[in-house]
Amino acid sequence: WKCMTILLIFCIVRIHSSNPEDFCFKNEQNCSLSSKRYLLYDVNRPEGFNLRRDVYMRLAVLAHKMKQSSNSELNSFSLVLPPWSHLIHWTYRDYPEQIPWGLYFDVESLKKFAPVIEMYEFFDIYPNKYTKVVIDEVYNLQHFEDMFETGNFEERMNIEKCQRTHDKTYLFYKNITAKDVKCLSYHGPATKLTELFVNTSAKIILLNHAEVTLHDFFGSKLYWEARRSMRFSKELKLIANEFRKTVLNSTDASDNTLLPEMWTDEKPKRNAIGGPYVGIHLRRRDFVRNRPTEAPSLQKAADQIKKVLNNLDLKTVFVATDGTQEEFNDLTSFLQGYNVVKYSAPSKIEKKYKDGGLAIIDQIICSYARYFIGTHESTFSFRIQEEREILGFPVDTTYNVFCTGSGCQKPSVWEIVY
Ligand code: GFB
Image 1 (cartoon, protein in one colour):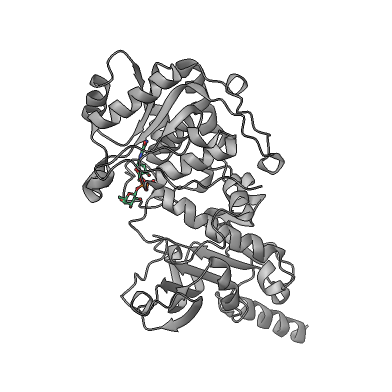
Image 2 (cartoon, helix red, strand yellow):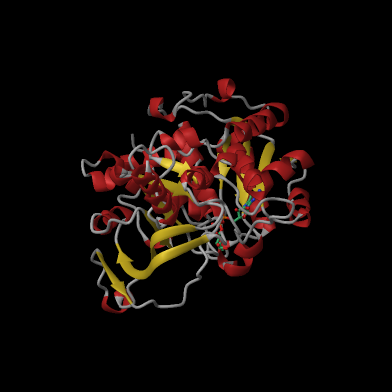
């Protein structure tokens, strides 16, 4: 009995004194055999919503490829979705500062492409979430300093001196710390990171400045699979569809825009007609300040809209914009005789979905228009163009942008690949 008691006390002491960082995830039967790994990432603070969506795709392709690998060092990774925190264009008044992906996207749909989990799911698995979460290795990605001077654009990565100081807080969580922090000069697609991951036994890795990584092959079949898996949340689709139906007389049946329940069942099509309206995305605010030559004058934009409406024998234009009410009124006054519509959210919807949700509703409505005109070089417009490729619109109804101070340009065309 004495021996048994001593053994029992020894075991209890061992369990309690074990390094919390050498943890086993909940529900894992045998800790020493546990092989799960977690990849977290963050993006440069000033980057907006729609560039962040593009960075996700680069990492989703990486996670997808790792999942398919026969190497157990790689196929054990889950990609942890960084909450939508502190985006500089958004306000977080009366709202949590960490918005999960599920409010905006169909996470089950994302999971059909890549092994992703929400941040709160990661916390739920982590044993010490209420005290602290320790990341094994943080890599602050940075561009090679000599890249543009030497013109050396070959794929490479190297641990180097940090080019600037980095925050000691991660993903805006006060309880996340790191064991080991390095700066990684990097040039190459996100998938090149596998070379790093096979050379470390770290279980939890965080990439800061993930926007430094590139796409594997921009516009490839895999790129489009990642993009197609980014379906919006069902609730936001319902809100946008209700508006299309009641205000714009637009339904999937009449617009020929019905898609299968699962993105994995989608087939190539080019026969979408779209609702009886022209959709426009008119980016204002910081875009006008930062890129004055890329922003059209409201009078010029109205002239361009009128021309398209007349050509298509339509009367209604749907306006997606971050501009002021005054700018909207000015635009409307330049379009007399036409029906100028925008989406104004009831306060309940605005409160629940905030800036990101309203942006998505605008994007959905523009996606279903018979014809779309976007803002030159706005990633918000790019994502609408992609959505229209998925819905199967003829190319010429999608790739149009407002003429700018520097002339009328045609945007690059990225046709969908299956
Ligand atoms: O998505 P985003 O980064 O595209 O735009 P750009 C920034 C934010 O503006 C979005 C709001 O998250 C939305 O909250 N927004 C823009 C809109 N257009 C609309 C709209 O039509 N409707 C609604 N509801 N919201 C880049 C920035 O913006 O512009 C860069 O990401 C930089 O940081 C650059 O500021 C000048 O690519 O247009």
